[in-house]
Image (cartoon, rainbow over all chains, first blue to last red; front, side, top):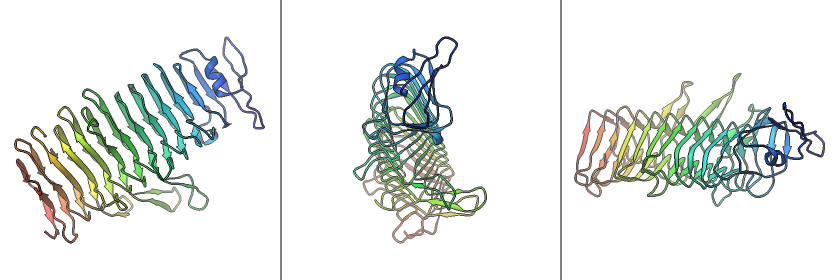
Amino acid sequence: MWYTGWDGLTNRIGYATSSYIDADFLSIQNAIEFADPGDTILVHPGKYNEKLLINKSLTLQSTDGWQNTMIDPAMDSIVRIQGPVEVTVQGFDITGGSWGIHVGSAEKKVNILDCFIQGNTADGIYVVGGGTLLNIERNIISANGNPGGGCGIYIEQAWSTVNILYNEIGVWWDGEPEDGTIYAGNNGDGMRIDNVPAGTDVTIWRNNIAENGDDGIDFPSVFSVHGSVNIQENIIGAWVYYYEDAGSTRFDGNHGDGIHVAQVGDTGSINIEGNKISENARVEEDTGIFILGIYGAVTVADNDIGAWEDEHGEPYLGNEGQGIFVSAVFSGGD
Amino acid sequence: MTIGADNSIRENTGHGIDVAYGQADSSIEIHHNFIDDPVVDGCGVKLGSGGVCGATISNNTIVNNYK
């Protein structure tokens, strides 16, 4: 097990402890290059001005969470994962690059957990390559992109299984009402998934997705949904964060559709269940749920689409435009 | 396509549910939903600006709509 540390002054001071080696590292990247496949690298608190290339199977984990461990290269993508590897990245504040995390080609398994990915100029997480298992869990993904776009999560190629669970995607507030900092939504979609081929599964569960510049969840391509997609128990649009003592902060809907699906192919299925979808499309005048073409199976059940009230009695408004708009259901569509 | 059961579709500014086109042999079921979109020119359920075949609308509560 390797450790990379920070002396709090001007130079990174790394050190390693294990039963078989003791070494210093000048950077996280230095530790990555020295590690053997399967190792875990623990990173101590600090600000690390470097970009990372992870091209071997390993776990990169902060010891004190993203609140105390920042990676800020001020250039290029920050954490680049590449090759037929199994990688876990956990507990970092990732900011200041183009893509926050860039997942390249042919990965076996990638876990992105408990990170704060904010203020990057392109997508927060950009997955250009396909792979076997992609887990994106418990992250905060805010204020990425620029006025030309930039999604919170953009998955371009196919994975056998994708799980997107318990994330805050879009606007987020990091403190109490008096002294907190608010982070805007992402400039493009909250999440965009281009390619779900037959035999693959995507689960989107219990995320909060608000104030993004385009759709909350977007499957924009005719290749998007030929596998199985489950969108369950998310808040897509307006919601209120309640503080422990008193007070609250209200977040608005996404600017485009709450959920946008270009096509459900004849082998595809999409289940939209138990979501709160409100106050979306206030800028672009779209819909709560928009599905352009259906050749496969679509189920929409047990959702609040439009106005609802939370457990504190806070009212939420409807979506701008239709609650649900389906352009075409074709022969065989079910 | 099945819309239901138990969707609450309320106070959207357009139609509650709008299906523009349903081809022959397609299946469209809309059942057991609550739809309340009290906006001028909005329907609770609108079907067929392009023609819809095979739609079943049953056991929904559709109130307070303008068309």
